[in-house]
Length: 145
Ligand code: DHK
Image (tube, rainbow, N blue to C red; front, side):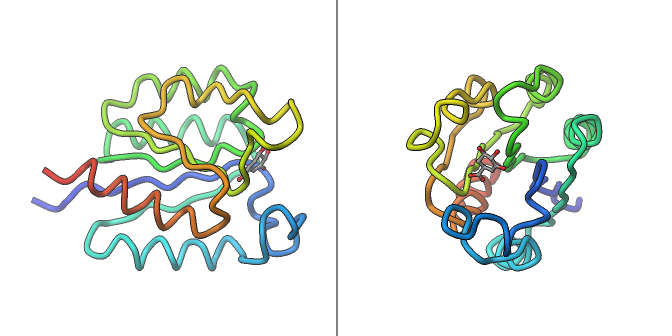
């Protein structure tokens, strides 16, 4: 039976990585990050997506509920206020790794209280774009039988 994929989901504005506040987010593009994630995942199938729309992120989490082994999510700005994203993630039966490129706890107060962190299995924040690789490796360890 084929292994279930890990879902790597990215929220608003992450499509602008590469040129978006490089002093905070670095200069890697989301495509660069996707390539790193797929390499780190090895044989484990990967679903890698980004959206600026809350409803789309919710629908992809529903897809992960039905088909995914684990979720690595950078909810970006939807981390802090989105009840719909939080409620969808509460339904996910597998491990959830929350990822932020920046250390949100060292930034402005509006970025310090992630709702997603209240239900995530683990949180990675501040490792820069390379944090995604650590998140993939951790998630694969969590989902491996
Ligand atoms: C990305 C965003 O877009 C911000 O809204 C978050 C997060 C931080 C990140 O560090 O990846 O506050």
